[in-house]
Image 1 (tube, helix red, strand yellow):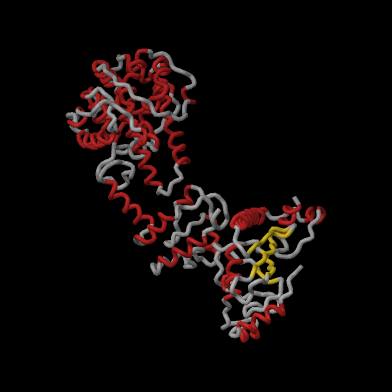
Image 2 (spheres, chains in turn blue, green):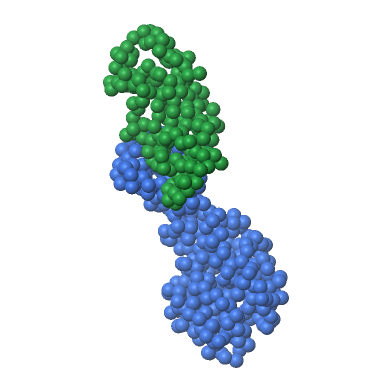
Length: 377
Length: 185
């Protein structure tokens, strides 16, 4: 039974595109071990707030908890952010959040794992219920370089139980797997992908890295190096100042494992919130995607932010509706009313042009009209 | 509650005055469900419009549902200043179809109005109430449009040819307006 479930869990990890292969390659000894450790590292942030309880509870409870947390987090974010963004962009933000976790709670996670590894047999029965939100937390600097190093060794053992069946850590890990009923491919996968670079950070730099942007870059760089496993530490990581969490970044992030990798400078969907050069590029990019009719419509759209209710039926607009822009004139309405109109005369209520016919003509005239016709509530 | 009953029955006989009573409603209970849902959204829209209209504080226009039927409203328009209709006030009736706002309401003058685009029955010839209707319009914009129509008639396609002919002579027109004006008590 235990074996089966642990296998299942492993499958979940392996099924991540691009990751499974690598992992199998490095299944022996150090490199593979480092990856796995990082997978755990990533999860540990999920338990950030409860570090104290959890250090008492043990390592397995910690890993268990990460999965439901991840799921609920993503949902929550989805609800909160009623922004006019495409789903892709949102996804990107979620990914960024994961990166932030990586950088912020890395040390915490290590410490916790250490504690957990010692209290192997303990596990809390209620961990699955811990899916609530975590407040931002001051990171502690983990001054114990030796321990971190030790951890790495732990997990290199545990990574491939077949290689080191006698290792106590591996048995711990196995039992942990068997206890967790969730095999969430997303959470395990995302952890896995980030693994390499995190290990390197541990090796070289013990302090928490507040500059997660730098880490993300480092991650990107490390991803490339993952194959040769040599992984010299990126120089800027060493020189980073002591940790100081960035509240702004944390509040807006989400967790998701869909595309589990750091932002590369050339990523198209890199979130605008990321403070970097890509900002300038991604913004017009989006505007073109959404509106594609030049600056006038776009400007107009910015002026009249999407209404909270449909002007036609007066029902609340949901997330899909607010990102729905059926007509270049900028007139917004809910999907139901839009469908209803398409069945009828198919003309935009704001400009009276047919929806199919996205003529460019006198946009500025239409602007005034649609402005005045939107009922103010 | 009486209002609600009437809305239900209004599903069946649209735009007609309904004498809703408990027995009648009982007989009309088995209404098709989708229709009810549809009507609910119209209700919400009309209620929202009513709120917006009452909050807007536009001068010279007002409207309110009839006692027992939110699908039938009575509105009033005051003639704008510096027009031949200054000082007069006109009552209108607005009856909303079940597919409002995708279809325009039927708007009529209840008070006789001597106007090139209003016939003797009170029917109004106004594009936004016909082919130029948009679901983005509401009661408020309709009333404002009619109010401005009073002062700026389209004499090229008149319903009232006598009024259209007289429009060129504003003094005479004003006298005619005053002569024919019979405010509803």
